[in-house]
View (cartoon, rainbow, N blue to C red):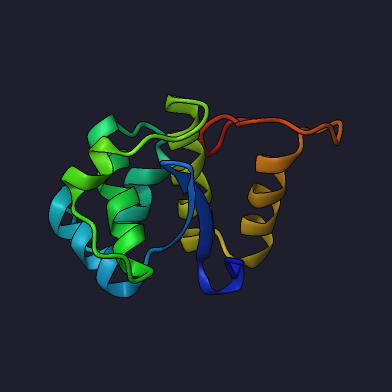
Length: 131
């Protein structure tokens, strides 16, 4: 089971549960890929809530590699998730919350992935910052 206190999440890709974690090395990789100068610039980029499919692919690949998987962006581009685009957005949102938001916020986002405000199970939720 993923440990949100360590910035880890679990995501289901191609029907298998994978651990994802944006380690310092993974964040450096994303800084370079996005042309950001530092982690603050990277966090601000993600906070805007506008992430392209290519961005999501890079983030998921970096998270998988950060957790020890040997995957390329091309591998991730071919992976599928339940819920289509919403499934990818869910993985990215939870991973970014676990990385940048701290323990309490990450736990809240993780719970929101499983239940709605009324406590009923739900499949996906809006992107970070959306209610």
